[in-house]
Image 1 (cartoon, rainbow, N blue to C red):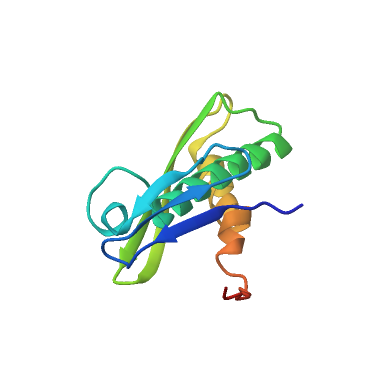
Image 2 (image 1 turned 135 degrees about the vertical axis):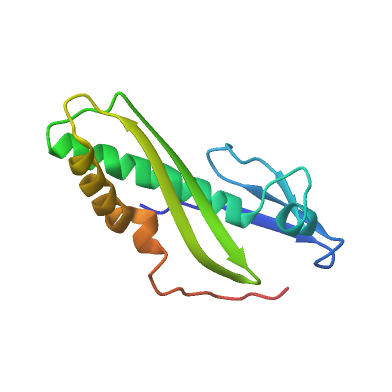
Length: 136
């Protein structure tokens, strides 16, 4: 399976702008710019999308581990907080609240730590990257 996302950009870094799209159309020419990334403006930014992706993946991983242990979550809510220092992502903090009938806090903490290490996005942040360039 392969998933794609596209980006289009026009102009220089500070005054330019662009849009992001996905085949599912959940992002369809969604605006992003320097202002939405480093200041405050309407639109999104790569770090926000990475945090949302990580929150979603991690929450599903918690659900999967719970299911394997015979539990079903009534609800799981995660906030992923990405820290950007300069031009480096220095960490992502995952805070999850769950309502899982029959599960104690110690077992939930164990499941959460397991999911933190095994969710697909957590692992992807540690993989080698490749790129290619075509200039027109």
